[in-house]
Length: 631
Image (cartoon, rainbow, N blue to C red):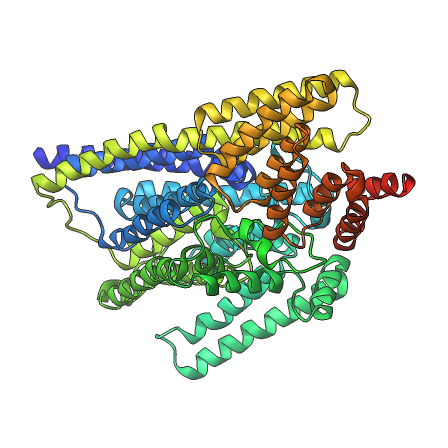
């Protein structure tokens, strides 16, 4: 009777975890993959709730944690130290840390919270359904409204003609499908499947392959091809003759499909021709080189979590105008941000888990003989590993770990693979000390999710909305004064809300300075007063980071508003030191110099530098015309 009660409590806990995790996957995936902070303001509490429930039920049922999850915890501790002590942009670093923590939490849930077949099947089925919906959205986007995106967004011009489904970037949809295509193919192919099962799983595989094709993601196509070619070579139950035959067949099929697409789809031909013309890539090598140089600057601890985009300015080459955000290579990005220490603590620990799981799988005779048929069969487990292998290869050319939905999805698939290869049948042996620890951890996770993670994301959501509003205003020179007042009022309120929630968000302080400076265009009589207010906000931003050029620009502008021209010059020079080949920084420096009649020749030289770096900068063009007309 006691045993029945235990099983009932454990089952309830697992189903509750499965429901919370599935809801989180649906919400985050369908909302641009969790890219926007307002999405994460719900996603993280769902993650926290699922983890708190799992830890609580583990304490109640005396369940010891799976050792695989423990291997990744040192990285989280190190990353928290790194963000606190090393990162020059800690507010960005903490959001980066939250992304890592969420991915590891979902992996923990899969190996500790979902040990029963029903809850696991529910979560995996949710992924399959989500992939189907994603492909339907991709078809709609590709053939009906090419610039459509969820949440009222519009697709970037560079991605028109390529499908991204619920994500903002086509490569993100491709990465999602990489994880599921090999298992779908194996479910359709495996021995013992009925005709209905073969048709069903084969149809899903074809649908997912169609979705992958619509993304026109060269990196994903290459990653899947390499993974499928390597698959038979690693099949220990086949002789080498059969392995090479199957690998050659996979290679021939990949080449045939590639040639067919190249000759029949103009967008594919354009993408592949561009790759050949650029000898592989044009922009990514620039980002990779910068990340390697940043790593060389601080090889042990890195330059700090979340710092890549800010410190990229040190290594930006002339003529490169993109805002990269990340290095488009998760391995290099981790090296540059967290150094060799962080890289080994995460990828090294993950490699150890893979080796231990694979070794444990080889020691399970019942599983190794392939006795199971269906979605839990050994062949499907291996296919799941192939999908993970393709995803791992794709990390060399993209930033999939930085997209929350993808990070969670790969954690689900990784956890399922580890659970199959490395099951822990007898784990209800926790002592009283461990039970108390699990209960304390459950409470800590709940408090952290609601008291730390939620305010951080809510604050960033408010800041992001305000900044988007004033950026749109800057792009609309014909806006009426009423429109300007309404926009600036909305933005000011948004920044105040952001800072009330998270005063450590330095970008919010800088944006508050910016909106205060913009008010001076509508209230020139208050120029000096507004300049002092803007200076105070810029000072708050600089107290949190001295490495962001925009913060120095905000300080310089606020000082110019007060007539403190000489002091402002020092701020603009500092911005140029941090971003020596940034066209916008040169424009602000030129505008500052133009305020002094004596410095106008230098202003013209500065504006020429701005236009050399970006010849279509409209603000710089307008300033050059004004300066030239007054010579």
